[in-house]
Amino acid sequence: MEHYVGLDVSLKLTAICIVDRTGKIEREGVVASDPETIAAFVKLHAPHVARVGLETGATSEAADQQERP
Image 1 (spheres, helix red, strand yellow):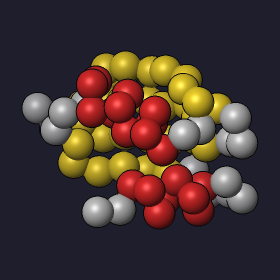
Image 2 (cartoon, helix red, strand yellow; image 1 turned 90 degrees about the vertical axis):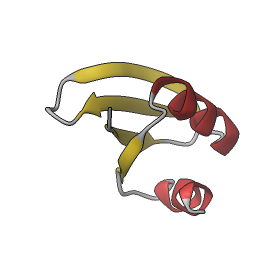
Image 3 (tube, helix red, strand yellow; image 1 turned 120 degrees about the horizontal axis):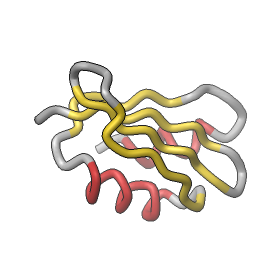
């Protein structure tokens, strides 16, 4: 099943929302704004990510760079 991930990044915490292709929320959580912690949460709860949406703002640039292969 494809998942879509939304990230709202702040200095200390990142809110994560994972939905399926119909828009049904599968999982929501808040983790430390650390690239490895964010990646671990996403890999655990959304193994088949189709797309990631990133809230734009001052802290989103660092997260964007970490999410790219």
